[in-house]
Image (cartoon, rainbow, N blue to C red; front, side, top):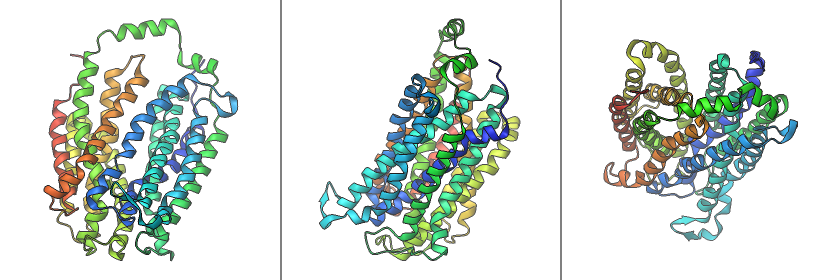
Length: 448
């Protein structure tokens, strides 16, 4: 089959649903610590609630990839679209339930240090992240399925643009709904209306965008797919021959994985402690009462600075190819992480909410490099392998495991390193990024 070019509209349609999925992911990232603190979580517990998202991603993404590789649900549901639809439907239901967790705090019952509202929120978070991962993976895989090599760069650029646009919308929803008059505070243990309606509207956009892609995109049937990708014994035998020496793949995985460990642990602490840190430094929060207006106001501002970080990431991503040309992949990677580290550490000294924009713009530089350069290095190392899908699924563990470890250690670091002041954890994140920048120079690229 001729690997014909797709029109811009066809490339856009493949990824449009990703816009809605990313709104849901942004709402989760910016508001989970705020929600659980409002429900009564101790600051030392906050990082534990963040174990579920990476754990679910590590389990679900490879499973969806393997299952959808081996199944065909007919012309209507296709290979990947079936999982897209199921994930989106579950996500919508959970996005409506999660912000109402405060209504499930029956008689203040506590088990293992968590009240019933927090347990309900925890289960909702587990299902939300699982469903987001189920819905997210098909968009990545459909580009690989249906786009030729020449257009893949354009297709992923469109997906990246939609991803960042969705992030911006999701991050800004709470402050927007506060601005139009919805309450940004509520009785103790109850989530404010500004957050609730952010999730409700995000759920509506998610299902509409996902349904659009589901309806307008027609996947290749198995015969067309096999012909398009040249799946035959000769190709497999050639791939087998290239798989004989895998030592360079192991070196690349281990060395890039070390950098990934420091980077993703750092961003886990940003997601977990930005709300408490900014509330303390810039809004005069007492560090105790999460129902206080200063904490909830800071929660809105977290969405704003996360939006600024997304803009910084876009700007740095445009500059990154030139930096790579000047100082190479590893040099650009290290510089980007160092710039992000400066951004994290600077938050410790910032007491003006608007000056925080500069800090989070710098953090965006690290985020841009983390999304691009590790995959460039790894895909170069595994190019030609017939196990590329499985290997990329395995590489996802270098993203998830650091977050799980960081979540387990967060409470201890907050208590013994940061003296229970949450903004100190952002300085810890900066130190981790600096370690990541140093570790970049240990990366082994290609065959030796």
